[in-house]
Length: 198
Ligand code: 5GP
Image 1 (spheres, rainbow, N blue to C red):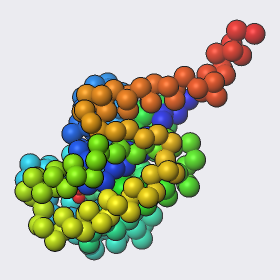
Image 2: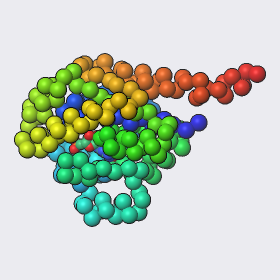
Image 3: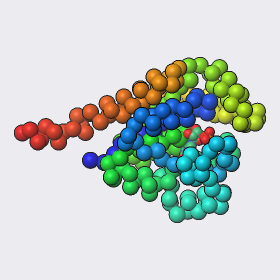
């Protein structure tokens, strides 16, 4: 039985990366899908761990070689999911977590209907604003663009399978892990157990 493809989206400033870190720390089996991006590296980020930081030319090459499961433009930069490592993990039965924006998530769902889509909300929009301004690593003009994008992303969230509110990091982490657990208990996943008993 292959692994599960779990796609997590949520606007910039919702606290997603902290929750992702928590989910990865508490799961022994989940593999994080490292995206390629043309965005400059932020302090503390590690190439090959947070992202593969590539030039626009390199990104274009990846598109031409059809190396990406999906890609999207986000506030002036490109982001994409390398397909080969993802397939390898799924075929080996490992679950894979994607942290990607809405357009990409919906493309993944179209190509792989069995993907599980989780959207993360902030307790309120004010929280998103406060977090983006407080983070201090993004220029005010880019923050405005990210806020606009966040509002649009909220309008798309109804297409997701699950909504998680990040009013408490531990709770959000637990909810995501519970969703993954529950998905694995679905009858369609476990029919073989019945067959073995008959
Ligand atoms: P950031 O620049 O804050 O790291 O990420 C900006 C947005 O790009 C986030 O919403 C993040 O989830 C999204 N993102 C990261 N990697 C990918 C990817 O491979 N594909 C798509 N479509 N979005 C991505």
